Length: 540
Ligand code: F6P
Image 1 (cartoon, rainbow, N blue to C red):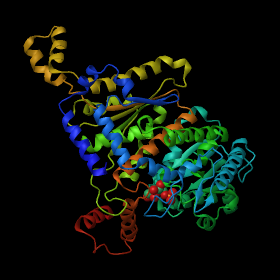
Image 2 (image 1 turned 135 degrees about the vertical axis):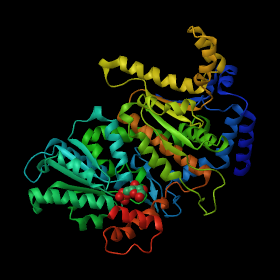
Image 3 (image 1 turned 90 degrees about the vertical axis):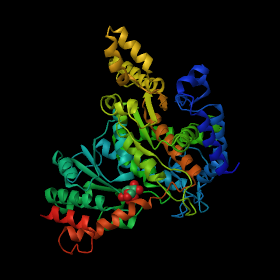
Image 4 (image 1 turned 90 degrees about the horizontal axis):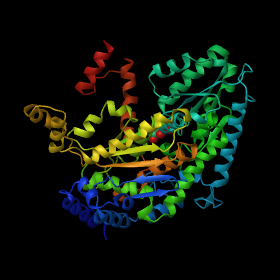
């Protein structure tokens, strides 16, 4: 079936299903959970609270076949240059490849280089952790500051927070924003004599990172002397010439390759701060989790394939139901930065308006991704999720077990809240149910009629839930890889290039042109009235 016809069939089925609520779908099929859930090992995806029926599900599978998801998947794993606008292979999967299979780019196996960098990272991380590698003053490093932004920051930050129970190395800090407040507040608490700075930038040209790196350099040189700089810096980049020009010794530079996208780079040397925090063995478990998901994605049939299923429900919500956002709601405090991480992964990948061949897309593409951990969000924005006029599909994440064995009652409450939210979104509460509840509380009839409309929950609001045993390094690696592949499958179905990010360039160019105007070195006369007015207000 052609892709266009597959989308049309999907839209027709969505129209058909309009009059059927989730409540009715569940009532009609007691085995709905078994039908619409899938698992790999201890990772379970429940997508039964999506507004689909068997026919819609089969049409979604037709869509995946029409888009040749399996062929495109094979092309990615095989190192074909599927990032067409940048003429690059897309091989973050090679970074966690634990099979003995070669991975070829332009006919050459990249695995020896991947393993060599991982070994060098492990040696360096162990030396920092053990205190064998000392600072210019002969002290062990107690603190590590990672300076990077976007993919050179979000992955390491998110995973460092997520895996805090596994930390047994120096304390990690992250500086990303060019706002001087970020680096000032971070360095203020630290002693330069015991601080290691990692400058992480794929391109080593990103203005925020270079500006923060220079400020950190001055901080070290200003307190410990210029000759101390070499002992306090390391770098991660694909641009080894630019790192050398910055003055970081090549023995402290960890490379990666142009076939690793920034937002897919946490598995590369960009993960060095995480490795320093949790150690090479736990880092290896993290890679193993991702590799397990790669294997599942490569081998499981479409109808049991978790990334494919999440993508298909994503497409259904976005295109067939026309829902323009998705909320990521981890009931796992340590995944507090997962929504921010997924914002880059998803929105930078699939926020596109033309197809690979440059023609306009025919369907709505990437949704707005946002979220916060539960239960906190319940006391903030869930009001809108339950009773607002905008329907936002939700994605819940919950572990069967926390790490705090003596606080099991906390975890029970967390689980109860997580399940209650998806149940409430799905079921809602009708006017009759609201009235019955109010009457049962002894309220007068007039008051019941006045209050009841406010107590109605429309329900029929879709969600998916991911359950895993515990947030270990393995489970986290598997979870991130799951989302990576989900984004890939959605991009394939939309026919876009999920691996470039030209949309960030215009703002960068204009900022470069504006800087001399902000400094008063160049007239702002050429600018539009608003920009001129704002500049004048800021300068006055
Ligand atoms: O501006 C967007 C972006 O290019 C991201 O894709 C990337 O992760 C981030 O900037 C940082 O880039 P770099 O690692 O080259 O400093």
